[in-house]
Length: 155
Length: 200
Image (cartoon, rainbow over all chains, first blue to last red; front, side):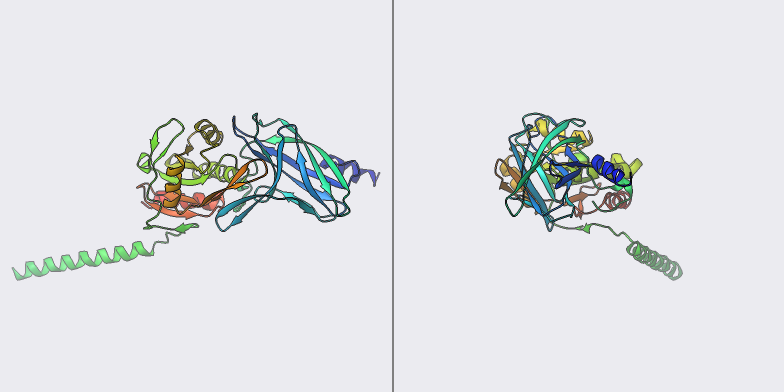
């Protein structure tokens, strides 16, 4: 029982891949308005052994890319990145203001409450790949805003 | 006669002294801001852009309100929705003063941000938020007038827009007063707007 409980808890919080190397938690996609052509997915990724997120795909659109946002002074920069490194046992956040998965050239609106299937592909140094299938809930357009309501002064 | 003159001089001197003291008093008032005070600056004097209904807009349309102007694009996954969501929170924090703030979102991506998308996008946050666009030339002029940088960056299947993420805050007389960094939280942002609304 002692050993089962934490596992059961982890299973509810994390979506595991077949080999349970990589897990994703708190994944969400930002909703769009009609005719808006792009949006992002955010989550926390963690891998038992070192690997990298190298690609993502979804039936939502053929164009899914891994991007990184950064600030250069007051200038917001957005770049496609070839991979996101996941050091062994360390959670890596894909969040507003940093890494995210971009869905581009969308043909339909992504509505709050919808679920977006997303497949993430990881490859380690030895070239071993694994994939993680997620069903990601869509949150409102204004989600992930500065947590002002929680009393935070900075996003 | 001399006495009258002297008493008049006395009164005048007294008045002058009062004025001086009042002036000193005013100067001592702590009108401090969380953002950068750019009062008297020569940049960002005005804009002339189009709203989603096709109407030309300038700052003069919002006289009597504080105006928060920032640049962005709707395909932007985080800075822009974060800025707009913060603006929603700022209005909530302003309470009774909320109606005295006009939020203006200028798209740096008029190619994809059609009037319909722009309107749906800003309205999804708050129906009073106004999205504005211009021709590529007009946008370039406007950005230059605000010392705002924007740049198209290709990605594998599309493109994104690097852009300056600061907010420009005007007082109720249409004078540019503050430049607020993107990192400023809603509380501090609202405090600056409130200070502006109550200091003129």
